[in-house]
Image 1 (tube, rainbow, N blue to C red):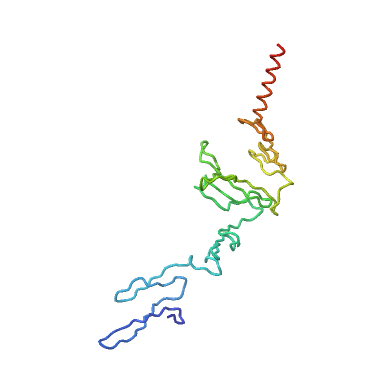
Image 2 (image 1 turned 45 degrees about the vertical axis):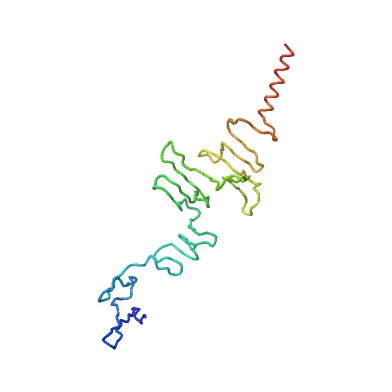
Length: 226
């Protein structure tokens, strides 16, 4: 039972021979954020305060924090968006890290990469010159044959349509105006530099095979000429 002073009332049954009576036991404390709990019972009832302020949810917000909770979703900095289990609010027009996993110097970070709008940025920093900064690892769950690649980079418009107004994929080294590898909207691969490969397919025909056949024809002509 709880009385008007927010005290929990316990009724202690006292048995005396053939009769019994009820005794009201009232814990003495003022109603604050420190909630009194029953810690031990022997011949008396002992009460001790504990601080549960971080566990108190007021209007879907953990008290005195910017952490929100609703329907199994958690939001940091704002009420969680419906589509996300974990939602972290990151402002636009401000370079800021929203998530970091690491030791503070090296690790994996995500956030906004520009002060002129919002550009999602993923940063990976290796520990030394022998460590790559960012790995993308895809693992198959079984050995069943499939035509689906393990790792997919999918570019599309906000309407889920094919991009036709800009390049699809680029690789650069600290220069957003000059790319080492670029895939344009027509699926053309542009490479700045040499291409090293064991073979190149042109319309499903091996370029190595074509070169070999041409070389054989050249050698045959040389023999005839001499």
